[in-house]
Picture 1 (spheres, one colour):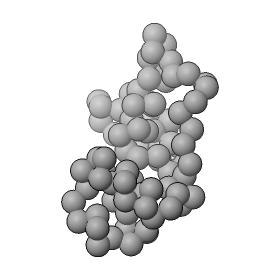
Picture 2 (spheres, helix red, strand yellow; picture 1 turned 120 degrees about the horizontal axis):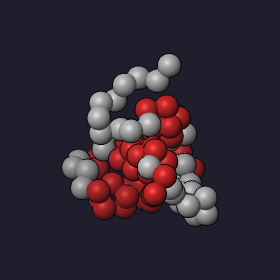
Picture 3 (cartoon, one colour; picture 1 turned 180 degrees about the vertical axis):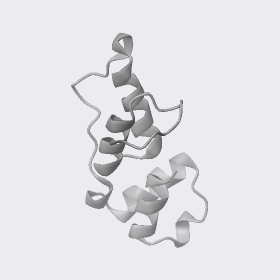
Length: 87
């Protein structure tokens, strides 16, 4: 049974599955909420990026810079992945 994530997440099971696949909280919430709304169903084409583990440290650093994660310059690859997932 899926954990209740409150009224901000409309499809808790979809959200948890997306998080297990490595998506950030924000992206998983957007997709889960779109799937729960028949008028805004996400496209089946596109939207598939490389998993964080498959990206270079430089690419992870740039993504962290885009989303405004502080202290990124001193983080290891694993720390950057953790910070991006919990952002």
